[in-house]
Image (cartoon, rainbow, N blue to C red):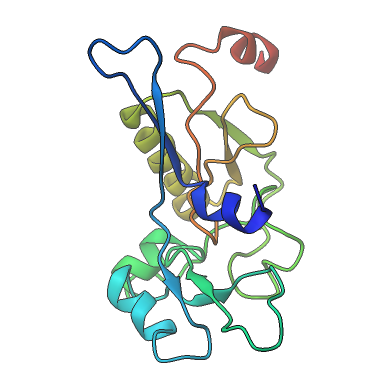
Length: 186
């Protein structure tokens, strides 16, 4: 599979077991919204479909000269959930950068360096929705209200469930009760 196709399919993978079937069916589901960065369905489409603050990010794959550049809508909460949702007048504090942010995130205004010398907190996410949502809430509280850098551990080295991921990428944790990760953290 091409890297472009994999990026389009990376939002979710559903495994369906049909009655009477001996093997499960794999179904890819994507929540990404395609847009044209310089076209009529650019940032306006992203704002309409997601939330104000979402932008049309060009795809990193380089098309040929005659092809239309396609992008995907970004995470509208990349610089902070509370700040974007409540408005800068009500909640002006930006979130604290974490190790999942790239080197230019602070320069682009997506986050600020922490004013305190806190070590990053790693939150363990597991493989069901309520655990994922709880981990996101903890990351928001730590990063935005308390100024503590926080990331979410999935148990998989190349997977991320960062609430602030600009491309809205996420995956579930490795297993329900990852006792080895908890032991390593202690």
